[in-house]
Structures are given as C-alpha cells and as structure tokens.
Length: 416
Image 1 (cartoon, one colour):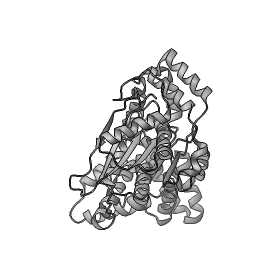
Image 2 (tube, helix red, strand yellow):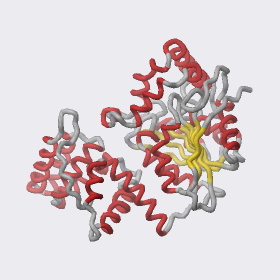
Image 3 (cartoon, helix red, strand yellow):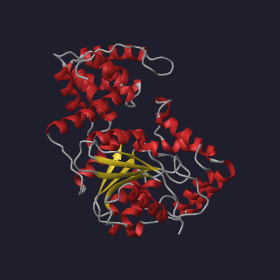
Image 4 (cartoon, helix red, strand yellow):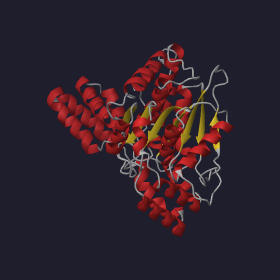
C-alpha cells in the first residue's frame, strides 16, 4: 500500500467557542486548497465553532510530489492520517471532483468517522480509465501547462473569466501550471481506477450532492442520479457555476454546506442559530450576496453613506432582502433579476431601476434581454412606466465602456 504524504491547513474555531467540530475540504485535480477560500470565509462566519481542515493533493500546493502509484482509497487513508494529526475525532467531509471521490471513499470505508458527506461536481465514478490514462500521458509528455486552455473551458461557466479577469478563477489556472506533472498524472490514473457505484446504497450518512448548473463534466443529471442512489442525500444545483462550483459561487456552496452540518448529526458541534448569532449569519450571507449582485463599489458607497437614522433600515435590507430572499436556491440570480425588474417597472420605482439594471447585467442578462423584460412588462404595467424604465436602462447601457464595465458611478442607494 502506498500512502502519499498530504499537507493541510487548519482554520481554527473561534477562541470563544466552548465546543468544536471539524470540516475537511478536499480540492479537485489541478487545484489547491485555494479553491475553497471563499467557502471557508462564509462557513466560518456561519459556524464560528467549526475547525476547517483544507487538504492539498499530492504534488499540488503544499503537499509533496510523489512518484509511486496510489489509489483513491489510499488518498482517503492519507487524509484520515492528516485528520488524526490535527486532533482526530469524527468529522464532516466535502470534496470537489477528485476530492469528492476521496470524500465518498471516506464515507464508504470509515462510516464510524464521517458525520456527513458533501460531493461537489463529482461522482461514484468519473469518466473511464482510458480517458484518464490519455490525460496522464498528455501531462507526462507536455506538462500541466498543456491543460490550461481545456481546463478554462471545463472549470468555469461561460463568461466567468471575462467578468473576473483577476479573480480566483484566473489564479486557479495559474496555479495549475505549478502542479507537479507526475503527481498530476498519478492522480488522473487513480481516478481512472475508482468506482464506488455498487457501494452507494450502503452509505447511510447525511449527504449533500451538488452540481454546477453549467458543468459539462459531472452534469446535473449525473449528479442527481448520484444523489438518488444514496439513502440520505439531498441534491442541489449551484446556479451560475460549472465544474468548480465552490470557487465560482462560494456563497451558495457555503450555505449548502452549513445546512448539511447543521442537519447532519454534528456530534460535538454546537451551533447557535437564533437571536443575535442568527442575525449575524444572515447579515454576513446577505452582505456577500449583495456584493456579488450589485458590485463592491456600489455596496461600499452605500455603506459609507449610512447615517444613524438609516443604519437600522440598511441592516434590515441586508439581512432580509439579500440574506433571506436573494439567497434562496429555488430561483437563480438571473431569474430573480427578471422578476425584480418587472416588479420595479410595475411599481414605478424608477430610483431602484438603474441599480437593478446593473445587477441584471452582473447576473448574466444581456441588454437585449433586459429590454425584452421591460417590453413584456409594458403589457401589464402600462406603457408610461415601461417607457420611463427603458430610458433609464438606455442610460446604463450607454455608460458601459468597451470592456463592458460600468463607467457611470452614480451610487444612489435606497432599498438595495
């Protein structure tokens, strides 16, 4: 048996916590612990008592390179050893793609240690041995740098890299080049030999199976079938994400993980979800969603303009509108933008329309689609209201520079 040496980093629980649980996070092939950065920030806010252990794969990030073949089961054993080195005990485990197969192996092979399982964009079997063998051969011949273009297309939803050219997605592609070639190839071959499909009916742990809406590798259909084969699993689709859903949509991914931990029999983990702590969590979630939809510049300007008289209202909007309603998974943000624009036009709320036209653009609607929403609303809200809204929309569109960035810095804030 070959047990690779894995290195991890621990985010400690709040020093004021009286009890502590553990969440183990495992990345995908070609990525490092950084893929979970946004999720860790939000989970830590919601569950301050939780310790979070992020683990790097062999030859990725901080973990040393290896030259000996290994299996997914041996990666699971290596992860378990790292857990024991950092305090041991039972734990929740979440994995992305290859990391999800390790998490599944831990749940199947060590049910006495695992409290709950989360698999993002993964499966009980991913691809086949032939395809993974070809990938390994490519990397051995040409290095991980040869994978960057293909990975960009697989990992991210359409438009993500263009919208965030200096964001974590671009940094993830840069980190791929630094992954040790042979270690990557060995990980690919381990994936080619992994198949836990026959074991799924016996894994009786609370589970979250999450797909990316635009993932063409582990599709929503395959992930839903994966969830249905597990006795106690909940399926979730992360809107606006492809294969690296936790990186692209950390707020939604973190919220799903928090739900699993709170409802999954978290022995040893005390979670206060009422009163002040519940409000703090809703505020943190709301602020994250608000920034994602409206943009940092808008929210920073709005926060800077808060006065003692408006502070309570702004807190209410952040917690209720953004932390409760906009955070719900039943509609995508794109769909919520359509509903919001139609409602604002109907109500004649012209002061809010400009802000939400910008938000709709950030949420993936095109200027043509926004105009179509207003045209459709004119049938039911009346021509004057829709005409006024279209005028505002045209001003916003005209303020876009050649790169699609908003050059109109009017930061007027009311209910947003």
